[in-house]
Length: 209
Length: 197
Image (cartoon, rainbow over all chains, first blue to last red; front, side, top):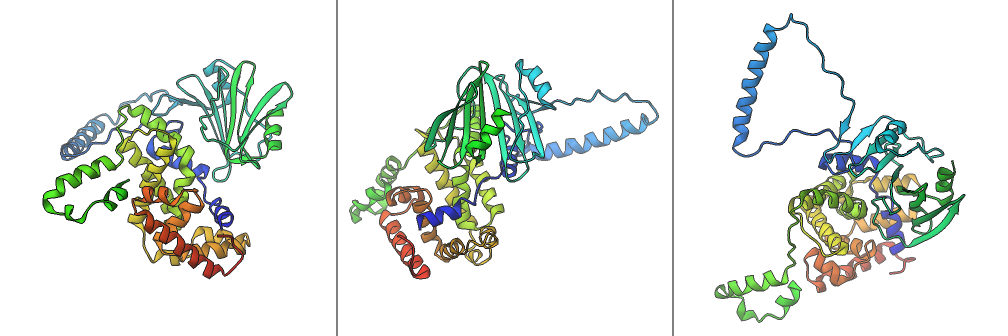
């Protein structure tokens, strides 16, 4: 019964899309999230509503009088800020320039990502998130030092080391799939995580590429 | 511990003039957690708990509600509750128990006792994958009473003992053992044979 029930429940998991939705709704660190306006509660809501209406009237009058005047559009700001100071970029090259050390895109991923996020954290860590929207996602982090920067604090039943070239990898998983890979490359701590898990050979393909 | 305190209490204490004593006894027996004042740390921890226990919370909610949309809302509401209350835990095990307790309460508040009769996404997935044996087991579990179903889930999926389940759900341990026994008997009857209980 235990095995059957667990086999059933394994199908109920937090998908990458669900994770992004919830993290974004709650404004948790690590999400691409535009700053929101502070919420007005209590007795000040009625005053805020009246002030908003008055502001609309004034703005409307202002615009009507200035319709024929040329306006200068502000320069586009492509930088997206999360509530906790992390910044997203458009490419691995931009991310590398921002963090000051090389960060390259991964290849030989087991899925074709439809959404790739390049992000620098306030402490200088670089993260690239690859997601196909629903089923599979891979998180790649690089930071100075040699510690575990994955943010994955789960205790896995299977943890072992292996080598790929001159890299020593620490693989953490459940015996069949690997959910976290840690290694040090050129003096930088690197981690690869996937909530859905990949096989060892799939991780090797990614790292060897 | 709460149930143990009241189990040994003489009945004559259950009078109006003894209410302050009862309140004091309840206070010392109920777990209370100091509040984390650092909101930035609370958010960091919320993100960590989401990654660490998100699946467990989602699965517990699904065992009650049988729809992914509502289970996702329960998961979000549970984390929101943590961010609001910001309790400070001794360790991750305590955090998980607290989160699952909140998720269970939120799920039960939303539970429609007739909903379990409708087909859910998990049933459809198992049918689509032609996993007839798993589909059969899942239909049998769904047919249990909610009080039996929650105990079955926490016992088999999370591996908690009946004492831990009682503490998590705020129920009497003997009631939990009874629900577990009856749930397993009901499952055995529905599934007839072939599964080790």
